[in-house]
Image (cartoon, rainbow over all chains, first blue to last red):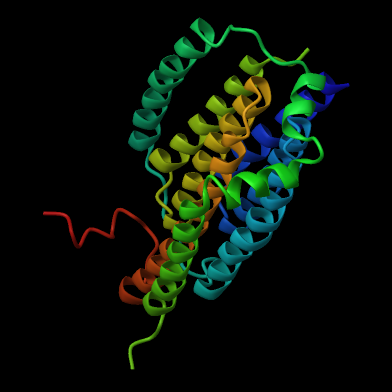
Length: 169
Length: 100
C-alpha cells in the first residue's frame, strides 16, 4: 500500500516538476508547480508528517503560488515577448546536471544503510499523541528563539516587498 | 517496502530538475520557481530522514525553511516587478546592470 502510494506520488511530483521546467508559458509552469506541491504534500503524509503536509498545502500551494500567479498576471507576461533559451545553455546545463546527479547518487548508495525504523516505530516517535502537538512542543520550548527570529524575518520581508514593488511618487 | 534511499533518490531528482531550471531557463519568474523546487527537494530530504531515523528536529527545520522560502519569494518577486518596471523585460541575460 505504502509502496504503491509512494510510486504514484513520486510520478506525479517528478512529472509535474519536469513540466515546470520545460513548458514555455509561465502560467502553465505555475499551474504544474501547484501540482508538484500537492504531490509533495501527499509524500509528507506518507512520511507521517501530517502537520508539515498541511503547512505545505497552505503556504506553498496556497500563498506562494498565488503570489506567482499575481505577479505573472500583473506583468502580463503573455503579452511581452518571452525570452528564448539558447541551445548552448541547454548543453552546459545538461552537462552540469549529469555531474550533479553522479555527485548526489554516490553518497546515497554508499551510506545511510543503518537500521531504519518501521512505520509503527516511527508512528510512536513522531505522532503520539499526535504530530502537531509534538511539533508545537519542540517549537515553543527548544526552538523558541529561532521561532521569534523567523517572525521578525517575515516582517522584514513584508516591508521589503512593499517598498520594492511600490511605484515611485 | 519503501526505504530511505527511495526518498533520497526522489529528492535528488527534484533538486536536479531545479538546477536544470536555473541553468537552462532565461525567464526570471521561472528561475525563481526552480529555486522553490530545490528548496522543496531539501524539505523532502529532511522529512524523510525524520521519518526513518525517528527525530522530530527534521520537521521543525522544514518549518523554518518554509519561513525563509516565503520571505525569499516575497522579496524576489518584488525585485522582479521593480526590474520589469525599470527595463521592460524578464530575461535574466538583459538584467546585467551590476555586471562589471
